[in-house]
Length: 160
Image 1 (tube, rainbow, N blue to C red):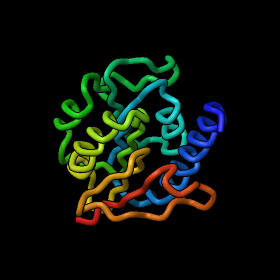
Image 2 (spheres, one colour; image 1 turned 135 degrees about the horizontal axis):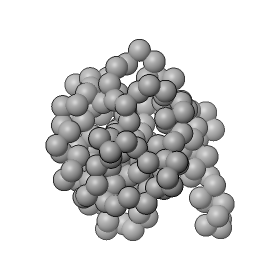
Image 3 (cartoon, rainbow, N blue to C red; image 1 turned 120 degrees about the vertical axis):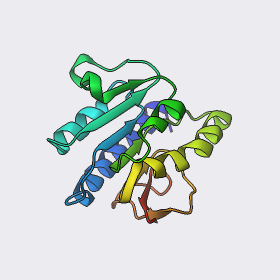
Image 4 (tube, rainbow, N blue to C red; image 1 turned 45 degrees about the vertical axis):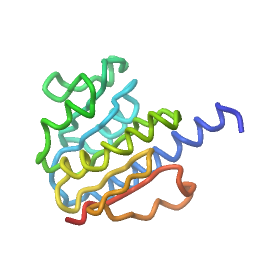
């Protein structure tokens, strides 16, 4: 498969997962945490799908299109593994983590610190949508929406 086709499959799956998650969030209070703002496409999508809900975005540096930059108070720059710790206990309804690199050693390190961080950010019953598989005793696997290939994206609900 070409890299272009792979990219199209990935962002299509991401959109389908986020649309599914937005329906699951109905009635669940709390902000959304976007780990990995990037160019801001998913932030922009979530802003449209969840109007009025606070979305806090984290990234190493600002690289988003100007139409997809959060308000200053909702943009946190620096190493995500460190900066997001300050938001532990925020009671997020959703943590979306699109920070995989496809470099095994980097992604293995991220998969080490991301699960406990995500749990610390979530409310009870909150959801994690991630490009990386996460393992944590407080995260229960959720089914992906129809049409999203197995292991293309991962969904979890905080159970504790």
